[in-house]
Image (cartoon, rainbow, N blue to C red):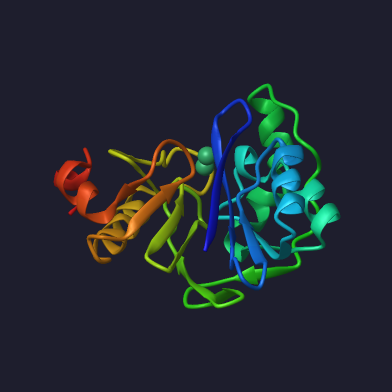
Amino acid sequence: MLFERFVVGPLEENAYVIADEATKDAIVVDPGDESDRIIEYIRDHGLKVDAIIYTHAHFDHVGAAGDIKKETGGRVLIHRQDLEVYETSKDQAAIWGYDIDETPDPDGFLDEGDEIRAGTLTFRVMHTPGHSPGGLCLYGEGILLTGDTIFKGSVGRTDFPGGSLEELKKSFRRILELPDATKIYSGHGPETTVGMEKKTNFFVNEFL
Ligand SMILES: [Zn+2]
Ligand SMILES: [Zn+2]
């Protein structure tokens, strides 16, 4: 498996490219900015991008959707409950003083239990609302991509439109039920594991 993380944009958002090394089939997760770097990697490795998947539609995550879609032909997939967030992401960015490209229409919607394939790699969609209504995680191949639902030592905010502390608690519990060895790759900050978060996450006492 090819796995590459790109820290992009002013909010240091994590974008990921994941590919089957043999077949070159790839997915891109949360390309939020600096599309040139991501596209260069995709080209250098001769990857075929089938899907551009958003863990949620906050502006720091979706800003490069147009560029990556245009360059790779990949389908933009989000959870339906984040459609409103997605369609207003440029306005949200402006409120915070940032300028992002207009997001292209999504090509499809993902929901709990859906499977994403890239060659022989398989990832299952978990709907994990709380930080945003259509938040999702991708779980498979021993890793979990969580967006801003959980971070190393912390969790995502719930005070954005559509956020819910109660939902976030449920999503947090579901994540910590996964095998301890599962590697967590978040929307910001370094990687961690489920086992490590069970021991050290600041919110374990409050949320479990
Ligand atoms: Zn977010
Ligand atoms: Zn974020």
